[in-house]
Structure formats: structure tokens, C-alpha cells
Amino acid sequence: MSPILAVICLVAGFALLVKGADWFVSGASGLARRLGVSPLIIGLTIVAFGTSAPELAVSVTAALDGANEIAVGNVVGSNIFNLLVVAGVSAILCPLAADRTLLRRDWPCSALAAIILTVMLMFGNNITRFESIILLVLFAGMLVWQIRGTSVPTENNAEEHRPGWLLAVGIVGGIACIVIGGQLSVNGATELARAFGWSESLIGLTIVAIGTSLPELVTSIVAARRGENEIAMGNVIGSNLFNILGILGISALLNPITVAPTAVFDAALLTVVSLVFWFIARRGTLPRAAGITMVMIYIAYTGYLIVR
Image (tube, rainbow, N blue to C red; front, side):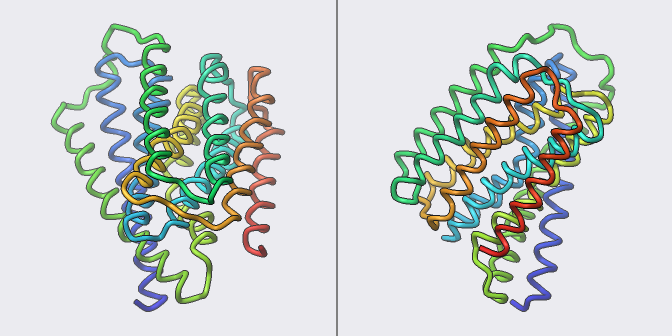
């Protein structure tokens, strides 16, 4: 495959991933609203899982193809991008008021998941099938805890007028676009890495990670501008939890993952920024100044990735 064709595959794949995630989130969120599910639950689960579907498609495909560094780099890079850029830009546009449940339960769990991943990579630079089972068990437990620990209104939301069949079409069509887009993205990224002599780790942490995080970026910015802080922040934290515990768990279960030693630094950085900005947000809001700092840190980190 020529570099030009690889770029076409990559762009087409990203376009399908973004559109597919948009359809899936729209359909699933509409269904949830009709059932009277709370905004925080929608942000932490349905929207977070929907916007993380591109990462799932890319990482699973990469793991099955043996492109391990793309699989891990995609998840770690996406989480760093979500936290520093998605949350950062959202805070710049509109200072985010953090939900107390998210600050007390979900954000610390997201940081803990990053710590667990860092420890796993420190010992052997790999994720074994046994470790993948641990991740998936933790993910299942976290999901149950989130649903049981968040108040859910019982009344239906009358604002959702779309018929059920249209919501179902959006969900199914979105999943189809995500699967196809994931395959195209991995193929294009892998060929680019080979053509230009770039490492799979660099491709996974930058191009693929940013491309698969576009749904989170769009979703959180729109939610922030509408004042729906619970969905904006719940989407970021819920996606990060799903990426580490769910996506890496599934990917390593299908094919144990081995990565370069530099992956430990990236996972450790994710842990540090998760903890630092959690302490800042504990005051009740994520201010514009913090958002600007977050974006600047990401720019510096990207520069480091290019030169290392």
C-alpha cells in the first residue's frame, strides 16, 4: 500500500469512526432518555462507551493483527488526550462544575486504573491474559457500582420524540461504521509507520489516539457549551475507565500484549495528570486556567513524543 493510499484509508477510517460514534451516541442516549436515565449515568456509560467505540475497534483490530504498540498506545494516548485536551478545551469554553459523585467515586477510580496499568507494564512490559481478566473483572464491578450508586429518575423524558426504530437504526448503523472505520484506521496507520519509518508507538499515541478521540472531543465540547457538565465530564472519565479496563482487557484477552519500555512512562504520565487535575477539580470546578494548563501540557508531551 502506498503512503497516499494509507493516508486515504486513515482519513476515511476516522470519518467513519466519528460518524459512527455520533450515530451510536445519539441513538443510545435517546433511548436512555426515553427510559428516564439520569444525565450522569448517560455520560459515564452510554455516551462514554459510544465515544470509546472507535478505540475499542482500533485496539482490538491492532491486537489481533499483532500491532501491540498501536493497541496500547491508542488507549493510553486517547486517555491522555481525553483528560488534557477534551476536558481542557471544554473548561476553556465553559468552566466545568464537577459532579460530587464523579469526584468522589469515578475520577479516583480512573486514576487507580491508570496506576494498575502502569504497574502491569512495569513488570515485563506486557499485559497477559490473566491480567486482562483482572481488568475485565474490575470493569464489570465498576459498571455495577456506577449504576447502583447513581440516582436514576423514574419518569420518562418527554423531550425524546424520535421513534424507537429510528433510534435502533442509529445504534446498529453506528456500530457498523465503527467496525469498518477501525479496520481502515489500523491498516492505514500501520502502513504509514512502515513507509516513513515511524514507530508503532508514536503512531498509536498521536495520530490514532487523536483520531479515535474525536468523538469524545466533539461530544464534550457540545455538552459543555450547552451547560451539560455531567455529560461533558462523565464522558471523559467514563471513557478513560472503559479504555483501560474494558478495551485493554478485551484486547489482551484475545492476544496478550507486549510493548516497548517507553509505554511505562506514558502510563505513568497518565496517572500523574489524572491525580493532579482531580485535586484541582475537587474544589468544585475545573477553571479556565486549569484548562489552558492542560492543553499546554499536551502540546509539550506531543513534542516529547516526536523527538524521543
